[in-house]
Image (cartoon, rainbow, N blue to C red):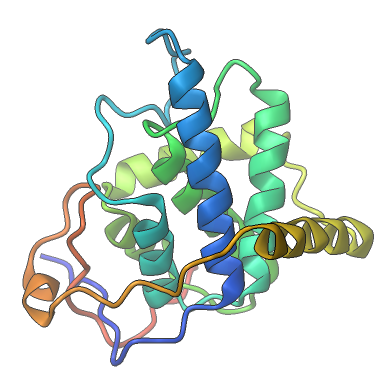
Length: 204
């Protein structure tokens, strides 16, 4: 069985992670309330809502992915582009987690020189490698392979997130789960944390 990721010690969660999770959680809840129960078919759509909150999930991605904070801004831009091209697929509690892990994976490959491979991100995200690969391809087609982000666009989305942070009180980061939970196997989108892997696997 392949090793699972582990963090040596808890990292301070940057504000961009907290505010982005708050924005996406609010959007998902708004679309949940407006939904009539009929959802457009999508590779990102889950059968049921994951038990882990958007905030906890994004903090877990941050804790184990070790990507630069700018990747979360770029992931937000990609999510916006995806929403613009796939308007029938509304971001909700059934797809937000898969969209998040896929957008961050896509952003880190474009932004960072060194990053974990898809197998590692699949474990962090609580999905299989096959699903991670499929979601990545579907997401790339969804944004029309438009990966480039200009400084002007990046600055605009930074200002949007900063405005969100100023207009609402963002609570402090949640503490990491108990150490006992870290030893559990990660096979679904739950509160469980990944459990082992100290060496970074480089994407080929």
